[in-house]
Length: 327
Picture 1 (cartoon, one colour):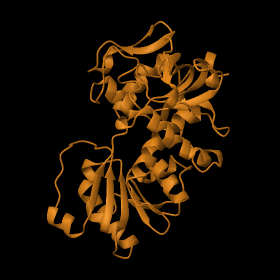
Picture 2 (tube, helix red, strand yellow):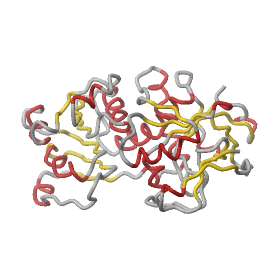
Picture 3 (tube, one colour):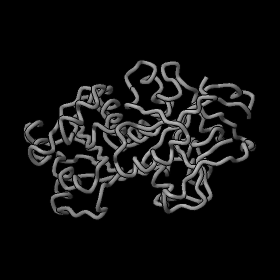
Picture 4 (cartoon, one colour):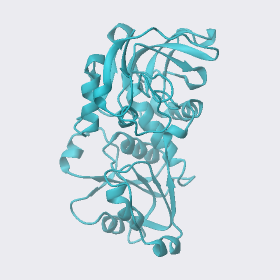
């Protein structure tokens, strides 16, 4: 089979496409013929050796969609998708024509999603749902602030929370960001260039602040996110752009009884990730949860796609498609 591969982590220059043996499934595993596989920022960080659990040599790729062709009889010939666990980091991942997957990590493909849309959705919606589970148990009547709401994870968080009755405030850097995403849900937008974000939040909430924050930006907006919280507000952060070290007013933090939580989806087992995705299936089936804009590429294009994602110059979410497997 053909696969994207790196002999050692640390540089994207180590990525190359080569022929490898088709893996054989072990007990409790299935062999999946990959039809489509997304390229995520975490895949790039894995290749750069910046994520935990990375071992080399390795075939990267955390998201997959395809057909089971070998393994337990109950899974034979089923169309599946999934993500999570140590895929692409501690075991070979999806950027190959075939991969093995523990059966607890398989989710049947919903009728509403094709292979490309499924793999484009899986990690983004997994991350968004995992973040929201660390926030209020009841969203009806609450306000959620989402930074980076035009991105894959941010827009997924906005869709999920809005479907459960939340009022969603989202940040955007420019009108162009919004124009590039006509598919975005009903969000009250905050222009980051107009005034400090926390002031915008206070204006929109009559001075109260937001009940919760999902932050996919981190560093540059960290203090503003904390300042945007209402008393006893909850804040989950899952990424940080630029300088990872931040500071904040600890007195203000404890006086308002704020809660700060981190999220790392690589700590979810592949079975836990599959369980989260299954809870989202009704939303996919009803068309409430839709994929981000996608650019399909070939496996040979994958190294360049990694560079584009690393340089933040990817206009859409890259999805590797394997034409021979897509039917």
